[in-house]
Image (cartoon, rainbow, N blue to C red; front, side, top):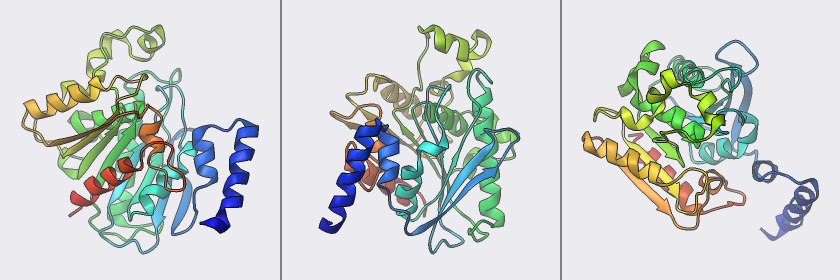
Length: 289
């Protein structure tokens, strides 16, 4: 470690001087070894209809696949911010796909969820048929998201209509991981979000409405210092799953804020709680068998 310390300190200094965001800093110090990255694979037309793929060395016909959906309040964010997530999960033996999706004002709800479904279907087909360094086979398929991405992934996992429209079924998923997700946020108070979620479709935007007990197992994680998305939304979602007899695990981290719920996945220098990454990987491996 000592021989890498000068480089690490130099990167820290450069990021501080340049005003780097946390993702930019984490990506700057993230290793590129042990996996291949294929960028801008297409799942839909348009400048947001692409995904990046992270394929670990030694990928086999049964290597699990994780589709990670980024956050950004439904009007921001990009897959370009999350190579550290791709590396984190690829280094643990998972193929990772990180799609972009259309944002407000280009679309309102449910446009971005429909994009998530299309991306998931394309990734599932790639895993089944093989390509881009992935052997054809039976790859357990997981959905995972942070913040707005957890709401999108949560609807894909629990409202069966979205996957059905793209030829997938709920039992095609091996599991769902939600990080600091907004699952139960009605009534909407902010005008910004009232525009993103029109009144006619607003009720259907709540993942908490859709558990029926037949879904894949879920892991819901929240930081108790999160002031962006109330951790009570994670508790509400867990109660809804449990009430229907579904399988759900929860983990709450004292002192962890909203960004920490995703930056904790970083391997080079976790900005949060490293135990979170361990918990996620344990869940993914347990449900990959």
